[in-house]
Length: 264
Image 1 (tube, rainbow, N blue to C red):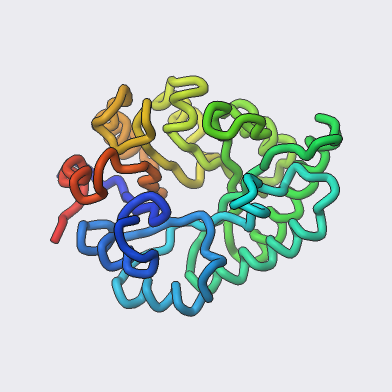
Image 2 (image 1 turned 180 degrees about the vertical axis):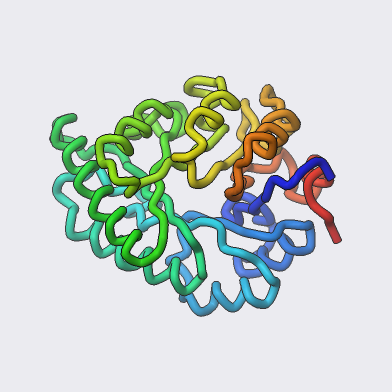
């Protein structure tokens, strides 16, 4: 195996050939030691915790409630008129994170609502992230926020590393960290290895997928052999979430994984 990089299976993207609660077993069978998924709230936290215990898996990451996902909402943090709903979501996310022994959660900024000015959306984002960051810190957890490319989610409020880092710096006191998604940032800016190395202390979680297509490593333009080795070399100790859509089936696309995990 190449190195010590720690890989987590994103169960919203991988092993979707089976029911969600059956994906934990397949993740473990194929060598993953951790899982992540953005929205755990469709299942009782006890049921998810039992799956983790049964298969000896770590929960690497969850997301805060992001509004009506089916209707296209992708986060509430920049919505000036939904602060109460956002704060209830913070409470729910902390409860789930504690039940799942999950050390961190991602707060999506969202798409600003119609009628809200940029200034109002910025103020809401800063206030909500600071509130959530304090609540997570008091619970012994870490809050992250993630820039997302403009192609997959047009209008999303944070699109580049620089924007995410500026928000984190404005909030200050280490209340919020950066979730760095190499797929999104390859589309928006490239320069993946240098960006991660320069901002290593702020990055709490990394996710990967190749581009174009958002498929498994080795199907596109990103040299993930180099990138994952680089993470190991610079001392990144967090999880790397495999948030990619298999080009065919999950198992058919897992050949790249043999360099990093012991399968079977």
